[in-house]
Length: 264
Image (cartoon, rainbow, N blue to C red; front, side, top):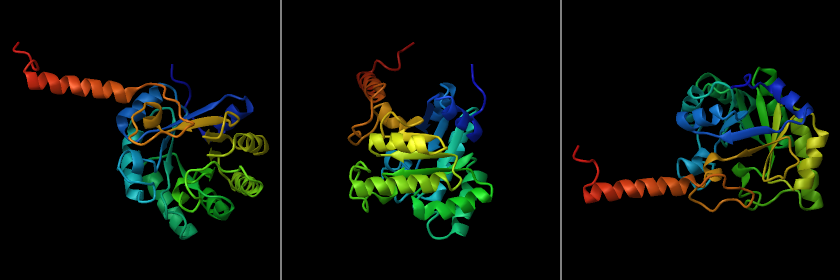
């Protein structure tokens, strides 16, 4: 049975009730439909599409147009989940006005329910501007893939006193800026748990331990369909990559030996 449609206010209730929030990425209609039918709360059209769909080395080259394109497909497959579209690098950093234009495009053209922005205290004013103009915003602090070179690679954030204070300050600033939820990526587990206890908004962890209000993973990672080594925090829940290869190899073999299609 499909539960009621997910809204930001319902996520706050989940946090208050200590009901864990579930979130996965999707980039096309079919995966979105499957994930939604399973009852996942949030579906993220992430700029991770750059690395898992487009073949880019990082998420930096992803464009607003690409996120819109995939968001349209995802939205058509969803009836319950709240769909969030990532705002790519340079789609919101230049000015608040440009951020509003691009966020508006994701809502109007892509059909998403909300947008997600990476950034700490320096992004808070932009978030306030968007939310005051009717845009639902999800924040993202800690390890920020759009800044991976600046951060020195995909490293856990908050392990030193200075890093810990920076992540905490960023989380508090963004939580108070009007976001309805906050992604904590690559944050030291104890710090992520402390942040979750201090902020009113729901926190969604990825590589941030079990103390967050919810969790998010890239769908291709948990299905073992990624081409690059998986982050150490990822658990493979189904080896779809192996099953797909077996099916394709069987097809190729039967075509080559003439047993498919059968004469009948």
